[in-house]
Image 1 (tube, helix red, strand yellow):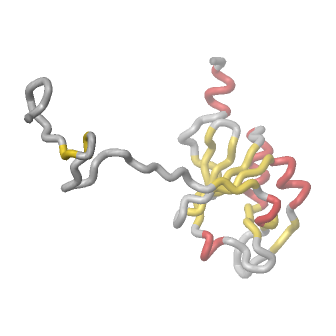
Image 2 (cartoon, rainbow, N blue to C red):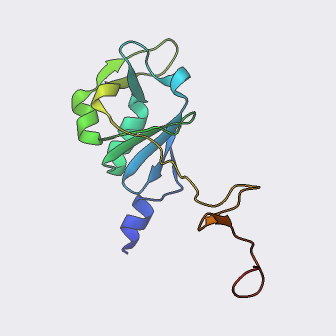
Length: 137
């Protein structure tokens, strides 16, 4: 790994209202408070975008803190599909409609382990576990 890449893309580095993860600008938000309501869109501050471009990052990923949904896009797509917006006392921003983002829902893990009090059936009969080979009979 060359030193330029490791310093340029530092996974733990904060950048504006987000962080750098590889070649991606990431941001964790609460959709209910921070998504634009009409039209439904995700906003990125102009200052953050300037820093993202200056750093040579290529992707943007926004994670909804409440349900874990992730929205991602390339920087080029964001710049070509977004529009300028000024919300209240916020800094100037650009917004891209939700329909233009690639949405990835969080992974759902389901354990196959027995729950407390459950016994796995073996040939229709409960099986008693044992410390010795073959189990109890």
